[in-house]
Image 1: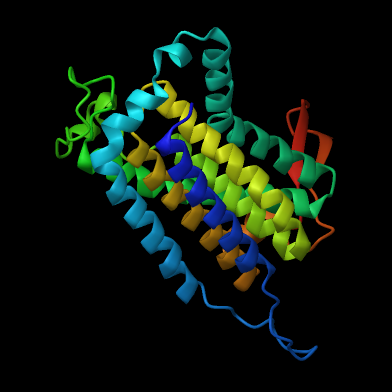
Image 2: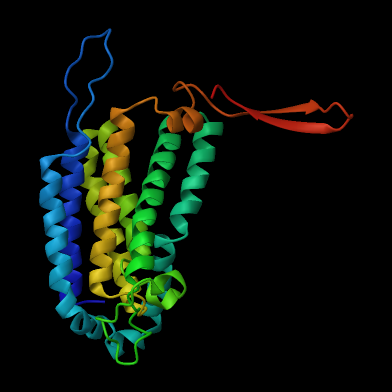
Length: 287
């Protein structure tokens, strides 16, 4: 899985990692001890730079999609059992692995009273949901054919609203890329809030992994390069903005419901006798 497509996507991923690290590591303004934390702006001027970069990359990819697909689908790669197996594993890490891992982290964080694990799981999952909402709307509306659908693998095959009824016309953007980059940006931003210097290590690793997810979808003939770039853009912004929203508006209703009122809150499972004489289980917390 090599070629100009990989270089474009890797370049976008590196830019995202740097942007997320800087965004997450920005210190909040000093506030008096008896006042609420200052509310940071949800959107920043630097967002426009990243958005412009992704837009330019997506537009530039359209005329190159067919050539990039040919490079990624090189017969030497397609016929390589090891590469095919790796692509399947990497694709699994794009979905459904994030949901499984997020659910496990949330349960472990709440039952084990590890608040940061629960926060990371909830905010990352929120980012994925937001990203998929945007990506899903575009998929259904634009109806772009996947590479394997068109007889001549035509990257310009768009059919308005066809994505509502046919999975083969849900190529643009890539949902797997959206999920992978949502996870990368949310986790990088979230951990940078706790450990500002961690982003320089975590960011490149996660964004690099997300890039591999996008390449695996191209290798499996499910997406064009421009699908992956747009999916990455949606994922990056959903992750960054979800984390920023939760950290600038602490105590919002969803956080109170899922994470409790304080750092020491945890789910408690109690066993009791039901009115009819049976045994019942009750999960409770200070939500």
